[in-house]
Length: 155
Image (cartoon, rainbow, N blue to C red):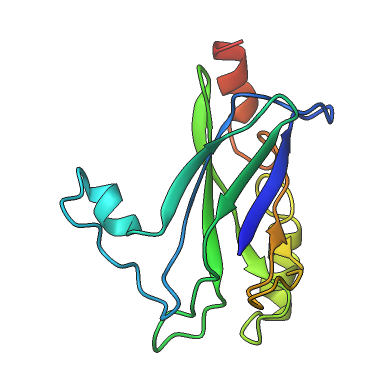
């Protein structure tokens, strides 16, 4: 599965140099531990994680697999997302959830459409392997408490 998107500021301009961090479970819904992980987050987030830096057009891209459902839970499949704005702040944005997931409820769908950083509701576009590529655009600071204050402190 390819996860890609564009990071924009509140005025719609693409932003270069933003770090996008993503992590998710394996196909069985497990966060497989990273051997010899350097810290607690690395152990907790597991092996399927990565960082991308937006290019001059604000684009980022990850190549990964489609995550599985958590075992013995009714949570929809999802990809956790964070944004690191160098010199400003770090925050999580709404996870990517998949429109075609049978465990995605209507309230979860509505929440994902209006989540932090913009809509995390993805419509998978089938690829050759059937994984379904997804798009997750991001609006910097949208719905993030105290974001404007952080921007004023770090212009």
